[in-house]
Amino acid sequence: MIYLFAGLFLFTLPAIAQIPDEIILSLKSGNARSLSEYFNQNVELVVPDSDNVYSKAQAQLIVSDFFSNNLPQSFSVIHQGGKEGAQYVIGNLGTQKGTFRVYFLLKKSEGKNYIHQLRIEKQE
Image 1 (tube, rainbow, N blue to C red):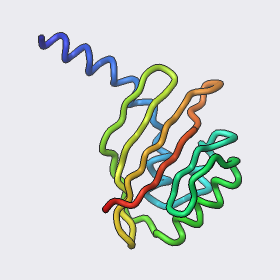
Image 2 (cartoon, rainbow, N blue to C red):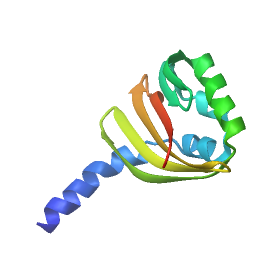
Image 3 (cartoon, rainbow, N blue to C red):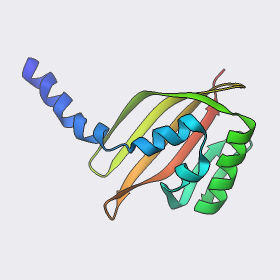
């Protein structure tokens, strides 16, 4: 039984290690430009008042506007996981206007992780 849990832990460890630190730091600091470097060419983006698939440039502007209106103070990862080629992170973004639940999906392409989906939703 212990070997089973140890094996599961070791199996998920590589997926956890593949989340770039720059993404987490960008969310903590509210740096949309740095975050957008990880956006895929088209990103499914859900933030308050915006819910659609946007180009990388459009998504950067929308996220920048969100950060301007909701200045980030903290970001903490609640859960992360995935499998070969795809990872996800769920976290809490603390802002001056409250806490938001953040979810993003990364997929690996040509050796680099790209954000394909980003959701930032107000927590009630």
